[in-house]
Image (cartoon, rainbow, N blue to C red; front, side):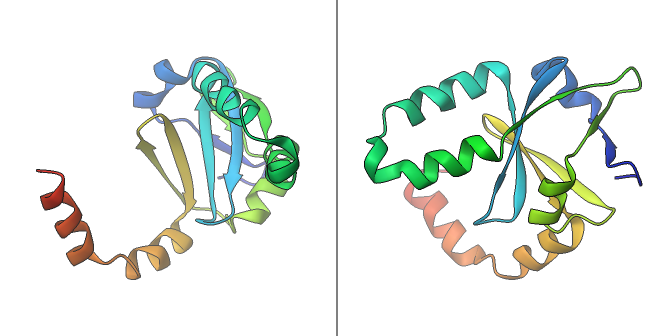
Length: 131
């Protein structure tokens, strides 16, 4: 991420995302979530089915922290400053596909997260699922 909060969208994800898409954040994991417009519509459909009184803080948080971004002519997006701050992005990021969306992690935050991953637990879950 450069000084103007721009980052290149990896080529392998550009086509799936399109020219504009949604970015928000996951406070639990301290990463930015990236959704294509089509995937965001599916996500919004799930949100709209939640009982509003019970989930009003969740719904408000999601919508108030979600931004439309566009890919510029050089293949970059601007990560809003407030999202960078929420997930502790300084300069280097890790971008990964996670099923229906992408995650953008601060390299340092991701390295710290990986220290707490219980590989035995993952192995056991994979075995239970038949992998």
